[in-house]
View 1 (cartoon, rainbow, N blue to C red):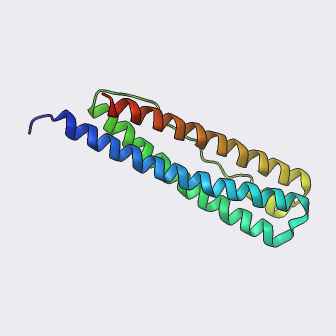
View 2 (cartoon, one colour; view 1 turned 180 degrees about the horizontal axis):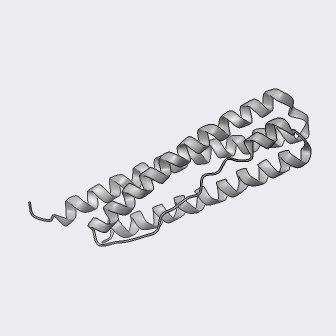
Length: 138
């Protein structure tokens, strides 16, 4: 079968959009976790901690999916002779410490982790959007 640049471009673009979808889902969950985290820091209690952790868990699942989608996107980019390092870090968000040592200090550490993850996801979204524009114009 002959190499068809247009087919490869469409596959790369589709893979990029899948990665963007999972990154945006993670971004939404992290934004929600951040808001619940702020509420938790200022006296939200057990319920807000549970909701925050639920959002963090969902965000981690979406970040793991995004990592997989970014790997696929990278492979597809190689098919159109474009290569990029697309990685995001997924972490444990200090969940254990937050549950068992619930305090303003630990909540602040968790909030910092959420914000770092939010920044990483935002950077990844920007990078994928930039690369998609390049592929579309290639």
